[in-house]
Image 1 (tube, helix red, strand yellow):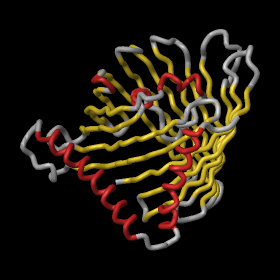
Image 2: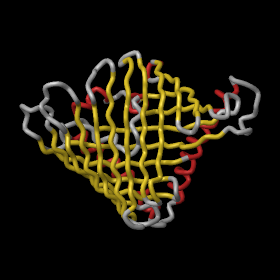
Image 3: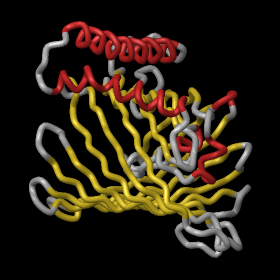
Length: 321
C-alpha cells in the first residue's frame, strides 16, 4: 500500500525540519537556527512562569521568587505513521509549578496533552504514540490544554484536582514508590485512582523494572493496566526494551511492545504486538533532542481476524525548559 500524497508530504516536511537541527549536533554553525531555538525555549519558559506568577497571586501576596519555581518543562512535537491508521501529529506541552502562596508541598500543573493519558496516569516509560488503531481511534484530535492543583504528601502520595478538555473536572490520587534494589537495579510501583464524569471511577496500576548490565547497556520492562467503572474492561500494555548508550545522551533502543483489552469474547491475548527501533540524540546543547522511530506491528483485534502485518515510521523533537 502506498502512502497517500498528504501523508507523504507530512512525513517529508517533518524529516526536512530535522535536517538543519541535525547540523547543530555536528557543530555546524547555524546562527539563525540557534537564535530561533533559544527564542522558542525562552518563550516557553517565560510563558510558564508568567502563568505560575498570576495563578499564585490569587492566593496571597508572597513574592513568587520566595520558593516559586517551574520544573519539568517539556515541549515536544512528533509525527507517527502506522500503515493501518491515520497519521498522528503529536504536540505536547507540560510543566510543573511550585506556588509559594498555596503551600510548600502544593503545585500547579498545566499543559497540552492527551487527557486520558494524564487522567489515567500513563507513565512516560511506556510508548504513547504506537497505539493499535482500535484503542486510539477515539483519541485522535482529543489532545487539549488541561491543568489543575496538586498536593504532595510524604514524598509518595499525590492528590490532584483538575480540568481537562471543555472544562471537564477530574480527581486523581496517586501512590508512587521506587525501590533501589542495588546500584544498578530500580523497581518502581505506581497505583492511581481517578474519577471523571464520563468514566466515573477507575484505577491504573503501573510497574517498571530497570537494570544496568554494563556502563553502556541496560534493560527496562514496564507494564500497566487500567480499568474503569464505565467500561469494566482491563486495557493493558507492556514494553520490554534494550538500550545502548553511545555517550553524550545518544541512545539506540530496541523495544518489544504488547497491548490489548480485556473485552469479553475477543479470544485474543495481546491484540497488538510490535517491535520498535529508536535513535535519540541531542540536537542543540543539552535541552533539544531529536528522535527517529521505525517499527513493525502485528495486529489481531479478535479471534476471527488474521494477524495483520504493518510497518510504522516516525520522528520527533523534544525541548526541555
